[in-house]
Figure 1 (cartoon, rainbow, N blue to C red):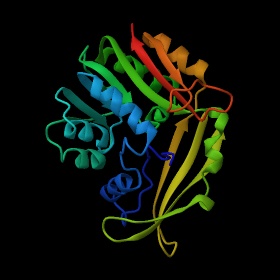
Figure 2: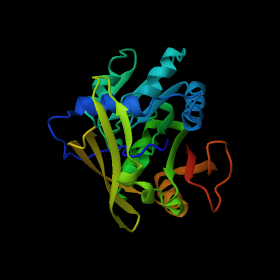
Figure 3: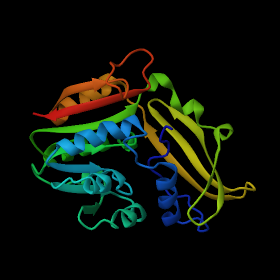
Length: 257
């Protein structure tokens, strides 16, 4: 299942709180390297790195599982969502920091930085991209790697974000819910869409509006080069295949020069 709605901007009804939304995200998007190839891809990188900064860590599932599986190095999760971090902080032997990618203030502290779940696409403006990449670059040791993925714009994933693709779930509180996404606009590389959480009878409980950027490879590479990165690997799928005319993903491992 593709992970749509990796970041939200307000519009929340009080009847379905931020804490509820964070718990629901974990339910709908469980971190499972055995089941999801993308999770397995990052899990392997994290296990091999002595120190890891997970930018946009959300509820911290990736780092928590790494620690559970025996990772003994430094693990730090960075995210701007207090409700998500409240869930992450259930694991106290990992550092959890509130902030955005551009807020990162570490200096040559990590072997690996990650942005999973298409979180990189939440960097919408040129200024956000440049500042965030500069901060991640500074946080990495010389030769450190930055791994992330974006949806390939050629796949036009936003065309599948509509109420006809709604899903039904029962949350931890026992509430029957219906979830769907709906694209509002596509302007250049930026897609604006809403994510709706409703009761089973259709009563809307919460609407979150999100903007995501869908940069092409050439755009990504120009920003990475300007920030001092070189491309170490580039894949079009989680099995390690090349980017082709039918790829749905642009998966990048960049190295700090």
